[in-house]
Length: 513
DNA sequence: AAAAAAC
Image (cartoon, rainbow, N blue to C red; front, side):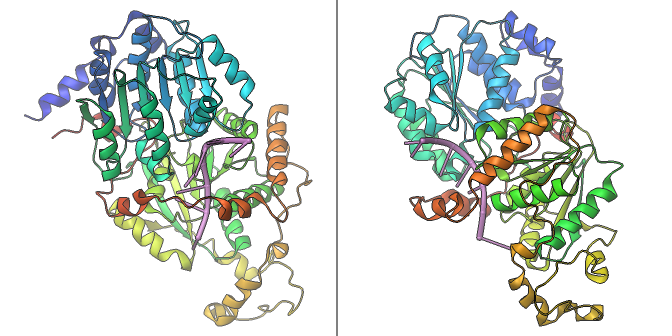
């Protein structure tokens, strides 16, 4: 009986949804014939001008579920100067850029003006596009409001408003901005609203800003795609030990490893690990929010194009980014919030492909690992090979310590748990680390110039922030305290979390009831 | 113990 729905959905093709011929032809050219559940559920309503509340994780085909009907509806009418016809809000710059790419791909038969309003780049070009009249405006909230305050932007011509990744916006403290923006747009508009989870703050927002929305919900499963092999890897807790563990792990996986994202919890760690990997001749790039925007884009593009094999990243890359075919995810740090784990490893094992994830774990991480296992409802197996002891027992790459020379040389392994270890941790400053490479460090052989430049950019932009009074410190304290109630509540929620960007196999079978 | 976003 429930299989009715399944077969009905699976039989559905894009031609059944009411999209225009121009859009359909672009979809066909892109190689798609069958809509995903969220697309099948949302597109017909969106085409009728109804408000849609889409509850769907990244990776369910969500973006196309608003891009395609919007393109169809935009075929009538024209944009006027400084008065965009549609507006899409995204939480991060990369996601905004990704949505723009979707509009370009599916809008190739349309002559639409698309403007991307994100921070970190100059206003000039954005201003020009607004002046020319934008059919589609894709923005992060901060830069959008900035443009508006400068009087370059009128929002009262917006016919369709899309709010994407609403729960993440909540998490990032964007909700007040979102409310302000919603209030600037005429209530006659159509609103398409997407969120992976529905915490109370988000429900309140939808009650306030949506009119009789059609609710389309894709899946409630709080699980990780089964095509991902997950392993925990023991490591010493000192940075140089973790780096060594990671290198050994990468080498051990070499045969199967096509490319990998390596997640760190903090931006400084991203920088350090990135430089360390370059020093060890790994073909690596870096991505985090304090890098300048050009370097961010370039790194991502190079990784996507296969010019970089490794991407060291903060959680800016954990959700939503569409990087097809990542074979490995390494968690250099165990994520502090369990749901981030699911997002991170969801970068691999997509579209039914096999993927592997390894999480480097130290003694201090146990409770976070426990929380992750509770969330995914599974124990994660330990990796077979014992990579963690190599360094400690052989001591070959241990840092030279100034005083107290080779404290542990000749000592028995059983000593490992003694107090000396803890004390040593505190002394392990960055200077001691053997491979925190200086910035001028010659870069490993690089295939092409673009890549070389991206790396330089990244190093430079990292470097600009180095030294005393670095931006990390300044920002941390200077920023106004933002309440983010979403975080705490979400943990004890139903635990609904996201997957990769392609639809995992088990989600193609429509979630019902 | 973090990260993300406007200048």
